[in-house]
Amino acid sequence: MTITTLLRKTVLATALSVGAQAAMAETIGVSWARFQEERWKTDEAALKERLEELGHNLLTADARGSVERQAADIEGLLARGAEVLLVVGHDTTAVIPAVERALAEGVPVIAYERQIKHPDVTYIGFDPVLVGEAQARALMEVQPEGNYVLIKGGQQDQYAHGTFQGQMNVISEAVESGKINIIAEQWTTDWKPEVAQSNMENIITAHGDSIEAVLSSNDGMASGVAAALEQAGMLGLPLSGQDGDIAAVNRIARGAQTMTAWKDVRVLGRAAAELANAIAGGTDPMTLDGATTFVDEEMGIEQAALPLEPVTITIENIDLMVDAGWITTEEVCRGVESGKLSLCD
View (cartoon, helix red, strand yellow):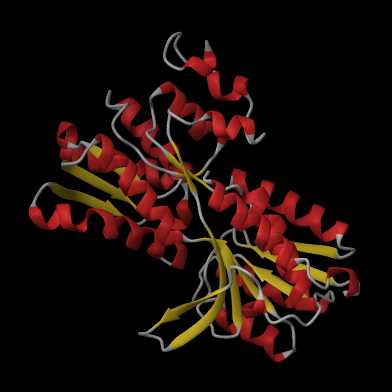
């Protein structure tokens, strides 16, 4: 993590805190798309802790991967008195009518991590394009040419499309020149590891030993890909991820995964709490330090956004995560062969 990034996060948190003391206690609602993945529990803990420090209450609902349930959850959160609403969209297009109902009731909406393309919705999250670029760069460093497989996230999720865009920003020139050949690419329903594993098994059946690298769009799916590769005796191929899941970092230490685009969601959760606090106090999010405008020319919309930057983690800098208290040395080193990583010796 660069000093610039750390300073930017500090400034952002400070700017978001402006007016915090004057804000009245509010009820903040969050609609999770699918709470089962490891990272969302960390997000929620950080979000809740900071909201409580600011004197606010948190209401939560888990859509469990259902469009219909998320719409009902949003209605329920509004009925329970949510005065600011954070939404992790399961289907970031299908959720817009429910979001518009909240906006019509005068309830500000924040798209958390997954962009909901609406001009009146503020976005906060780790920039998916930067995530995808980090993934592709890290894989190209170890496999600059050859046969690539792309395991993409949920097709209904704008974040998956942004990650894919970032990947292509980096590898498209090599693809066009023929240095990289994309032999298979597959969207993964709801980013589910078991779906990624099944998809990867089918790809291995079709392409076998010709596969030379796998661009997996997150760590959960990378776990499924790694399982499929292990079953086929191919574990150790260049493999990407994102989030910084504990199991993924251990795979990196063991040589079963190349990198993860680490998103310290403790920072994101607290920043989102600060943003909700600022908006509840009447602050225009575009006046906050770090704010920018996301533009979709095709849809003809602009929206306020506060994007954060991921940190590329490889076997060379896992110690950053240990020093940050994200993971313990014991968790990193479980099953790591002697001499493979100095941190574990």
